[in-house]
Image (cartoon, rainbow, N blue to C red; front, side, top):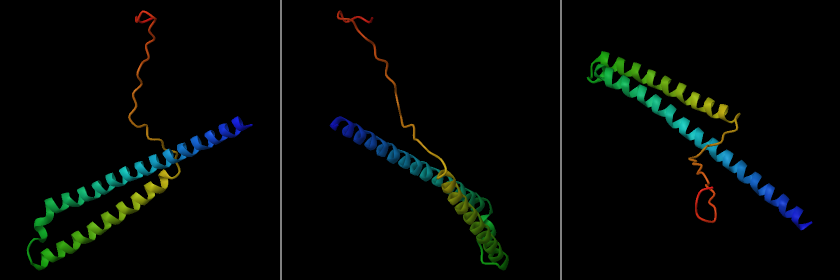
Length: 118
């Protein structure tokens, strides 16, 4: 009977490890995806500033209007991006994710008693 208890205990431990690994994999994917969405948003804002920033560099009335327009566009881009990050996170919650890690299968070569393959 002790063998049955130990066997069940071992299976339960393996199941817990597998669940923890799956949760860890999913959280890792969420974090990586979130960083990529943030990088896309910041990259878009940076491109706008780089190409059009000269429009609001001075203190003219028109420059102030351009700056306000840019701030409005910036807020909209960030809001949409943040909403998409939340949507992506919720979508990933519907999946079972397993990180394949870095694996390498090494061949096992059987040798005879003389040390030769065979």
